[in-house]
Length: 435
Ligand SMILES: *Cc1c(COP(=O)(O)O)cnc(C)c1O
Image (cartoon, rainbow, N blue to C red; front, top):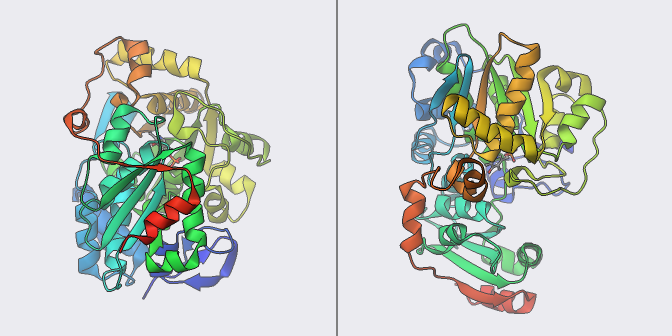
């Protein structure tokens, strides 16, 4: 059986895997969800604790994509995408951290981006033109997407980033890969970059000729591999212990992936959503009113989101019932002051270094444990502390955080970027010159 995908805004209309993955967004502004989600079969549950992360991933991905992707292809895609570990670290008794930052760009987004890149490459294998991924970035997303598509046959990536507005190492992540990755350094803001990207998609002829896709974060294929590591974490707990997952959240893709894992039969005690001051979802869970608003800046900036894009999926999973969502998910929000204090306190009490996002998660885990002292909390550590060197050194001192080799070595590589004005005409002329 093939999988079909519906839009959260029109559950009676279905598209196939190609449409859902290559288009990302349904025309009705909803989000794609898989129609058929059944618990994994008994054979899986007999052996799952003995499987590796990528072996689990193969089973999970097949349960979601069904026969829409041949078994051997899916096996290859998963093994290539999830080719780095997600270790569980026991920081204190019944307080674990799941480290999701061992991929090439040091954040959990590597799982989603690497899987999506390979799936897109396979879906377009017989197309006449290359798949062209157009992405605007204010820093991190571009790096994860570029790295993920690097050397994936049949694809190329064009990244637009605002000149002088991304950090030095971030810029190196965007501009040193070469090959099928082209970086455009736009003389403007991130909003200009986004405007240029949108303008290209609106030109139908160009969009079709270049086989444009956006590879953005609401793509269903980015969520699927993020559910793998929930199983990986659970399998590392003693038999019979159900984890409480604590998820530092912005657009709530990671948390939604956890809900998918639960739909596939994973036993979870509870989900805890942790946010910084951008607390639209904790507020909704408390009061029943969803009030999206402009985001405010914080030190956990990957979670500075005022209108979480995956909220529609969460509502859909709970049948649009606030009471049902509230039963499974609790929400807590924290400001920068207490987040900084937590980075220092946990380092001195346990020796463990939390990044600002993980520290927000840690605080939510502590808040949860106050009313659930028997819980076994698993905080998802979403990024490596060295990605936020300024904050870390302010709290823990200079030289306190080591920069992993795969990031540090970029410093010596030569930046290659094409400078461009923030002007649609010039950008379109340049795009047209591509073959
Ligand atoms: C993207 C990101 C988040 C937020 O994840 P969502 O899936 O958008 O909720 C949290 N931490 C880090 C480091 C991120 O890069």
